[in-house]
Amino acid sequence: MPRISPRLVREALWHSRLLPPLLRANPEIAMAKQELRWIKNELPRDQWRDAITRRSKLEPLQYILGTQPFGELDIECRPGVLIPRWETEEWVTKLSNLVASRCPKKNIHIVDACTGSGCVPLLLNHQLNGQSDISSQIVGFDISLEAFNLANHNLARIDNSTPNVKFKQLNLFSESLVQELAVDEVDILVSNPPYIPKEDFYSSMYMNGVEKSVRLYEPALALIGENEFYEALLAQLILPMKIKAFVFELGYQLQVDFVKTFLEGKGWEVGSMNDGSGKIRCVLGWRKEMDFMQKLAEEKSS
Image 1: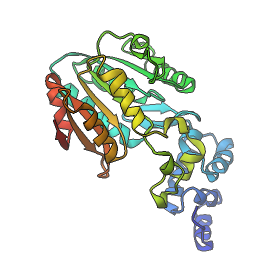
Image 2: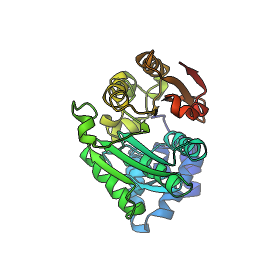
Image 3: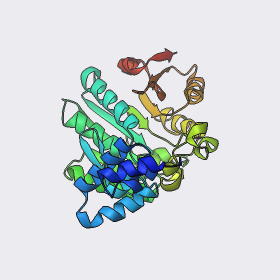
């Protein structure tokens, strides 16, 4: 954590006596002021000081406030379950827009592996079933009981009446995953699996690592991983279930290359997609009948 100068503390005090502790998590006054506004707007006054103390210890604001906006939805967040990120929201929205406008099927089946809070199925369902003429059936699964419970809670909060989304507690590495998933057909598999190598997870941001607050508070189970998760997605689901297309979140070109190599010669086209900041963010693949998916790809190879 960078040292905080006395000048910055004095400037923060000039704005509010509540502001200086937030500088420990936000060394820029503007961001600290924004977080203080959120705390004041979303929590009762008698919880402000406790919230500021928690944030000063680098606890993510989403756990303190209890929610995170995700597209048009407000996703409840709890410790032990990964916080939804803007990068994920971005590619999910691009995917739903493309499916709504270009998919030849009007009844589409989607599976989300490593679903976490359930944010991806819930936003896809909202954008496809609620804002287009596409009818979607979506199943999300996660190995974590905390994630499974939170996903179902978010489903109940957002749309308790929908039969279009279901969540299951399943292990991606189970030999009987296909039988346990119990779906007859899958058109698109999506996933934001653990993809941060252990070395990067425990490195500082100055060494291309993750934020300290992520290391301290978010579940390593949902973050640390390398090619083994992409191999499982491909070998356990994509190939045996004859899935027609996929989008997997990632953070490294090496992971894109692994997926391309794995599917080489198997009738797939594979491409990659960057996020809004220009960083590699997804690998995607499609078979001939879903070739509209290539519209998402910035680079592709057969």
